[in-house]
Length: 145
Length: 167
Image (cartoon, rainbow over all chains, first blue to last red; front, side):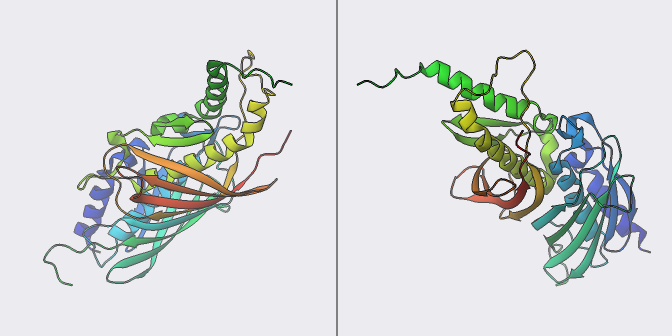
């Protein structure tokens, strides 16, 4: 396992201001896979009647998780950005439960990474949302093509 | 034959702004992201007021892709909720001065697809949503977002929504 590469990806994500604002936490990082979680907070609620977190906050978690998965890939991109992200909302996330997202690079080319992700609350068997995305691969300047 | 005297402009504006405020201010996440709405008649423009916590790439720097997605989704939901509310507001069927705050039900997102066209700059962003189809149960909405030039979009999105039950 390339510890340096994993350390770099972890630092990259932890330096993201919006990931900090949502109090995101690393659960796992593999080679082209990542798992991130985020606590429920009153200020993230989208439906005040039920206390259910806003879909946008779920999107932010999934997008960050996808970015982390790209950065953890053995191809070691220097950076990445979202090209396209589609989210399907399967059900409302249970209020006051932690949300966890898992993302996987299922295909990568020289220029694009294709991802699948899902998010769940404490009920792991029923996803809250699933996502598919395309992310850019930024190559290090002057690096091997 | 004479038509009824039009309402004073301030009365009309106050009623519309109160309805918009009821729609927006009840949602904590909208405040968390710093999103506000400009209104001209029934046309809404969502404004993402810049803050450092919205950054996703500190090197560039650029807005977080998740923030962009969330901003567009908020713009779409509020536009839909607003369009559904408009006729009742205009007809004066909603009492916005009642002591019990009026909380309209908002549509639920079924799916949302965001197309990132260029990186979001560290400054305010704007979005306008267009309801392409709104049935009794389902709606389809398109949203466009820009920063400096209206014609140079930095993101656009399409989503499907489940309309709240009419009660």
